[in-house]
Image 1 (tube, rainbow over the protein chains, first blue to last red):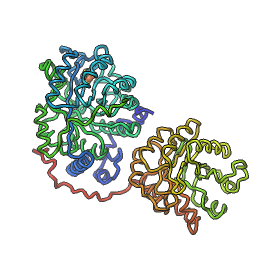
Image 2 (image 1 turned 180 degrees about the vertical axis):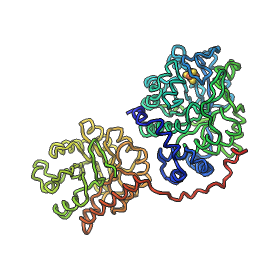
Image 3 (image 1 turned 90 degrees about the vertical axis):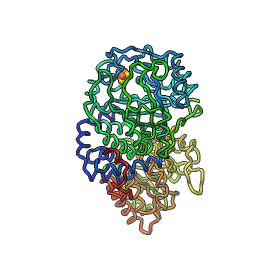
Amino acid sequence: MSFENIFRQYSWNDVKQAIYAKTARDVEMALASKHRSLDDFMALISPAAIPYLEQMALMSQQLTQQRFGKIIQLYVPLYLSNECQNICTYCGFSYDNPIRRKTLSGREIMEEIMAIRQMGYEHVLLVTGEANQTVGMDYFKKVFPLIRQHFAQISMEVQPMDTEDYAALIPLGLHTVLVYQETYHEEDYRKHHPKGKKSKFSYRLETPDRLGAAGIHKIGLGVLIGLEDWRTDSFFTALHLDYLQRTYWQTKYSISFPRLRPFSGGLTPKVEMKDRELVQLICAYRLFNEDIDLSLSTRESEKFRDHLVQLGITTMSAGSKTNPGGYAVDTQSLEQFEISDERAPGEIAAMIRRQGYEPVWKDWDVFQRAGL
Amino acid sequence: MEPLIIAGRTFQSRLFTGTGKFGSGVQMEKALLASGTELVTVALKRIDTANAGKDDMLGHLRYTHMHLLPNTSGVRTAKEAVYAAQLAREALETNWIKLEIHPDPKYLLPDPVETLEATIALVKLGFVVLPYIHADPVICKRLEEAGAAAVMPLGSPIGSNKGLRTLDFLEIIIAQSNVPVIVDAGIGAPSHAAQAMELGAAAVLVNTAIAVARNPVRMADAFRMAVIAGREGYEAGLGIVSSGHASASSPLLSFLDE
Ligand code: SF4
């Protein structure tokens, strides 16, 4: 049984109603519970939980330290291409956005790698749009060995692929795949993805199943916050996570919280998520699941990120550029979205240390590679 | 109480029982009726497999609401287990099998390697396999993937009556399982059974504690009630246990107001 079967048993409106109907008592029950259920998660993300935020933050801090210690893992995105055949209403790389398109060549990738290595990184996240002709499996098969030589850990955030493709990339060094559903609201999903392969809601929904079947080490989930009611969307993410953990139990999981950011010609978010609410969501995930990685990108502000180090986050990016060639090759090309925290990796590492935490650059090695 | 479904079969009772150690067949029969059980495990090695129709013990178990669950107790390898299961299928006309492989005659601890191998083989042969296994979360997931219809982790050494000594691991197993978790072995008192049910176990299997009680019939009834109470407690949602967490005084979130 794949996730779609489970997903179809739920109605968006019923879930939304159930979340907004949660009471203080439900929140107290959830906080006191030993093994928190999806129903408890609903209570923790509900408006009723807001008065309990301080307590949630403290519990989240303690659980995170108990499970992970005082560490923050660091990674950086490497944008390989901004070519994209999809239209996504919220993205700077959208097909209908008249920007100069670029896919890095082998030589250009090397230049980027060198710039990134100098910043100290061992963990790189490869990002592309969706252009299967130019940036498809042939391209990945060529660039992976190149990148593999210089980094201990490779993650990827690209178009959803088939099980065989993932299985072929794992021995080449693929460790983690991030695939955000953007929104679990099917109707709105269609509105925001009117054209291209990405318009197929179900194919995207089942991507984590294909990753699990391929035996990937780690899967990253999330929604794009701003497209729809974040509480309802987050419940579906948690439902997805719960299903995946039971089914692909040898796989690790992470959650990210991208809030819609401005880009040229962009969409105004339908729903605004306040800082307080993002804190609530992060703590709720931690209370629901002690073991998942929670990741915060440079979309967030300096001050916010500094405080979140202690509240449940385990992974951060720093010094990110969101354009292909942004580190060395073509620093002025158009970004996918604006970043907010522009500090250099060294400054971020120092900030983490000041809080009594250890920045971790490397947490993986070649001997752990599947298929060896 | 929600009914329990295993491999398409519905059970109203979540108390599974055994047939060993009773003083007499008549006493066993009375106790099992008092327990309300609908699934009774029998050791294949005890049954006259050639003349199952005339077997003395089976004669006391001819009730339509009670399903027989033959077990492979006494086998030491996967190969022997598969053979025993096939014998049981023929003699008792059921494809359900409680898989027990314990090479060690003293503590009767299950062999995880042979159990996994036998589960894979038996599922291929069309059996509904319920493996008895150590409370090891990883082996339980492996058995589930191999197609086991449920997993039966032990609460403490078999026959010990010590209760849920493997509590921490049972919690993990229940939290991550996609198949029913039936706590087997070690349950010595009704309160142990209730505790397992409160944890979220799908059922418990109790034999020694009923069979060797001074009054097995009353003990069976006590277990019947304990299992219902534990399950009802679980389904109703257990109340607040003081978390010991301080609240509201820490300054973690003051930055949000700045
Ligand atoms: S979000 Fe991804 S698929 Fe959509 S336009 Fe941007 S790069 Fe292309």
